[in-house]
Figure 1 (cartoon, helix red, strand yellow):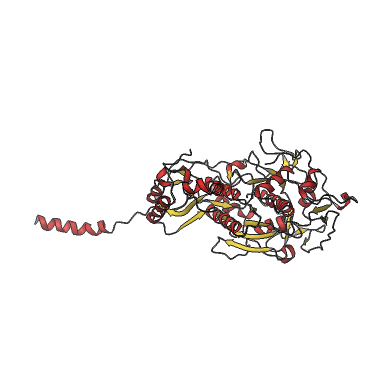
Figure 2 (cartoon, rainbow, N blue to C red; figure 1 turned 60 degrees about the horizontal axis):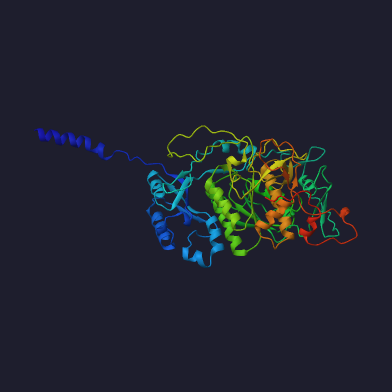
Length: 527
């Protein structure tokens, strides 16, 4: 009888026991960064052992999707190879960044951190381009910013676009005007070309050392031809009246959308850098690398894929290339290293200083587990608190207005390389209308366009050489409103080219570097 009673009890409770719900550990998307080869213990420094360990690690993960990246090529270089014929290559590879993006629970995360070849991991964060419509999206970003070091580690946007015109630039009657005026161009004695009375006031500021604004934009005859500016943004709509046939489509990381710029931001950025009517370098090649969707947001891994694509294209074509990133996120060691890697391979990277007030900022690194509550976010006006503005090799650009004052929305600080016009700039929006907007998002492409002008005249320079040339020719000491303890370099971008009225009867030197030697005004300090 007792046995029958026990069987009855077991049969009553057994279904409850066997159908108990399974607790699923949440999976979070992370980015893992591999150790540089020379930081690993000797057994892992050979390509064979390193590759075997890397392959074994990836195969052990339960992540349904793993995407590897390598900026400029693999980090794996044999010590024998280094000592013989690949010294220069090895320098670059040591500056490169290699890793993978994966979805993981705590178990996978422990395996990755304990693998011995991973430097650390951080969450795949939201990157944003700022405008009034995107404010709610920015406030809704997911928590993160926590870099987690492996046990073997030895290392302890952007901006608000203030619309001054709604759907178009306003004329005296207050009506939007979108007509395209004819480009009245003239050739000067050294071959410069002029654009009288440009609507974009930045073009009236960058050719002159001092205020007031000049009435005419003058630029070299090459106008950036032979140079490519890769716009990592929301896409570029190839509006013929503004871009002729100079826009090409590169990578698109936004799988749910086509190549069209549904946000409009990327087209505006491209118009400022190289548009025929509003741009600095009017003959530059523009390549759309779409990393932001129609809401103006993307992720760290999207940006990494975009940068990796540009470096691959640069290595394949050997064409002088510039990257512009008018987007920002919380501080990211991985993204900064990727940017630095691109620059080390010869591709200058311009980034916007970001805006203030910032939507979110978390201290980094946070040496804590992923389920620990994050502290309350703080606001910061220091560009060094964000990525990629804090990347050591990036050219971080802050914004000024038409009176050379620092724009009130612009971040500053010691990570600022120089300033460029970014407030109330007029250019072509993605829907084909002319609009006036503000932001460090738009100061950055102005500076990128200036580099394209220099490089178009001196195509024999490499990325470092043209960066030094731009840096030596900045206008020093004219930016107003920089705090005494700010740390930002007081320098404004300057573009090459002389006005027709300045040309005398004698033919001047044709080499741009030689010509600039006579006009540099105490601008001997490069970057």
